[in-house]
Amino acid sequence: MRVTVSRDPFDTELLQRKCGRVLLSEVDDLVNLDELSRALRGLTDAELIYLSTPYQPRLVAEVHRLGFFQVTTRNVYARGLESGVAAPGIRLPTLHKAELRARHDIEDFGHLLRSLVTRSRYWKDERIPRGNALALYQRWFYNSIYADYAEEVVAALDGGEIVGLVTLKEQGTNLYLDLIVVDERAQGKGVGRLLIHEAFAYGAARRALNVKVETEGENVPANRFYQKLGFLLDTHTLAFHQHAPVLP
Image (cartoon, rainbow, N blue to C red; front, side):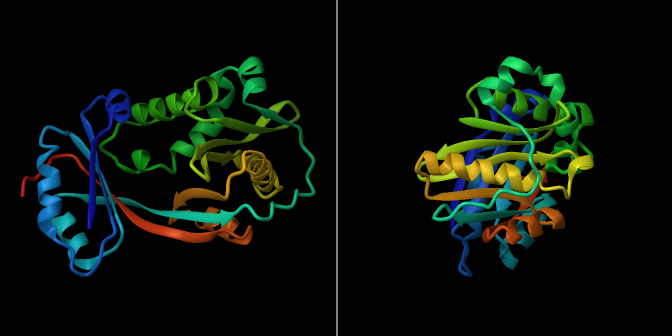
């Protein structure tokens, strides 16, 4: 089992509590639970720990014993860039990062921000104040559009209003759809497909080989959407929070 432990300064600042992360991977039936115990000892002062792990019965039982509770599941989908995504029938103007920065303030994305945050692990954890969860996503939006957290941003407009947005991050030969959201009033009209089409065009121009995207396992419409576009499930993980660390 591979264990990656880190502090999370971004979450710490915006959630106003010391936050840490524990990411478990390469898990097999011979998992050594002592590795998890040693990892948690490095975060004894953390007030909120996020833990991500593939499903393994003994490991999940140990995570629960240590005081973690599950907040969501995560599916990562991947698709090669050897062929693009056909453009939808809908025709809407799009703006890219530089244009968005010049023409729109962060308040113009408020309706999209609220749609995203209510599906997040932060919102599903009742011990995290709603205002802090909103502040975190607002900063995420701001850093992606007005700073350098995302390499590119594409927004779809209808009647001058932003009805969908995707932020793109490059990592090696992979292009990640970091934030992707469609206004609830515009869903089912091809806006999501338009954003994916634009993302694939950007990835091809940047010579990326794969496109990856993460969504909550319980978000059935999003999972069906990616599967319909030819994305295949790459990884499935469980997401846990712990507010009062219990030392092994």
